[in-house]
Length: 376
Ligand SMILES: Cc1ncc(COP(=O)(O)O)c(C=O)c1O
Image (cartoon, rainbow, N blue to C red; front, side, top):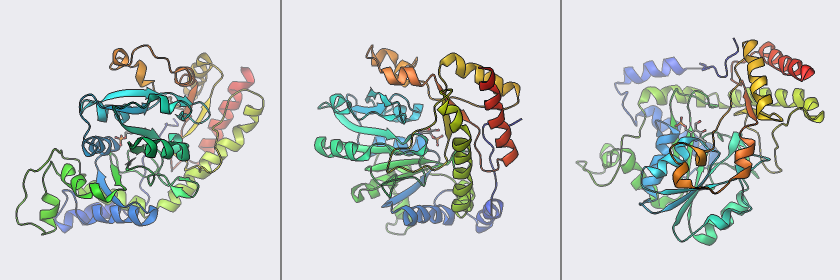
């Protein structure tokens, strides 16, 4: 069976977990959390990084940091993970869903300004499959209308736009270390804060609304409840696992990008014959090997291909279902159509891609795709 994803251990994960226990601290913000945060800040130039238990947590923190209130509007692509919208709905925002650019599945910038009103508080973007959004246009809009930009960079670690790391553009950016991501810690995430103004409040929100972080740094002699917050920080067990992965970032990235490129180079002849469509990589963007998707010519064909692969013990999956048509939000969204999202989400299929994938496994997947298109 070739699963869609496989978690892996690459270095000192288990030793570091043991070390954390032996150090006598496995709750949050110990040595390993600090090492991970420092690693990410130094490598990518993020102003401040706080580890969280998930990207979802980091998104929820941005919602509190931006003081989202009932009646505020937040613009989010409909082709998104639930948390990308839910984080703001939790605080009372109305989500204004945007359509996607079918070339990249990223937010469409052409009509984005039309969605901005006096109530708009933020635009949240996703760099889908790790490929950067059109950052010049988005930054211009955000500056013109003086609204927040959040980069949901769950899929975008170690990817760039014109040599600038993704996660450095927004006021905030959020990352995921869920087991399906490039670097993993089971569940796990990080919040990037690029504006100094929010450093202190972010620490408080992450520690249940208290100034415990300051207390632990011995800057104050007691800690108190001073703001909204929740328990967003991960345990040292998660951070210890993650640090071992960060130490192997180059190795993981090299392998994932290699696997991505092999899929691309092998399947391109099927694209040339019009059988399927491969990802588009616009100029100035990079591939980080997060996920490999292909587009089928119809929803029916996607279903047939998924079944065909499943019969060969290969698990290929799709995502995301348009959020503007979801049972939870369709009545709030109303009837406004998002034609590209509605059309293209039905065609996308993600192929297995994980660090320990063997060449023979990938060869077999590619062969099966060719076999399918011989018949279809
Ligand atoms: C774009 C995006 N944002 C957020 C998340 C949620 O990440 P997590 O599972 O770390 O909360 C995901 C999950 O895959 C995602 O794809």
